[in-house]
Image (tube, rainbow, N blue to C red):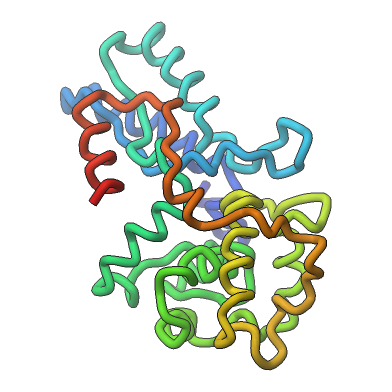
Length: 243
């Protein structure tokens, strides 16, 4: 991994989560810890290439989680629990919850390209997706300050927008949310004049390319029961959503 980093490869473009899974199992056994809790959401289950099982985020998916649990229960320790605390939630719900913690706005990151410099590059799929998914809950001026620019006025991001929204045949090979989540964010933005004025890349999306029936309220009311959370953790996450 270190050698690949030196050659310019990004951690996000390797099965980094799978590597961490094995490291965490070792640490859990050494320290007598029974729970290995992750932060992989339900959205990570969607295929990168629609209609196939090709998923850039396989090591963050529920399928991998179950496969890995089978492995550790049969070959390491039967009582070790490997689960994602955020598995019941989608990215829209997580964005909604995160928007309440304004004191973290300047410090949080989700950009592989800018990770080494602790910054948002403002030019990649992860940056644009994060901007979109937070847009229903954070004011435009605040978002622009976080990313140091208005991403929706960067015409170079048009191609990425088409990929994220499902217009292109393939989603970006990055850890981003679902097509449905992006389309719901786009629908919300198109009704907000502060985002659609000027040369917004949203204007490059035709009305017939986006499902207008996908709304944010629908996504915020979801709860994925396909998860491995112990009951005590489920109560915590349900309370957060209900509040």
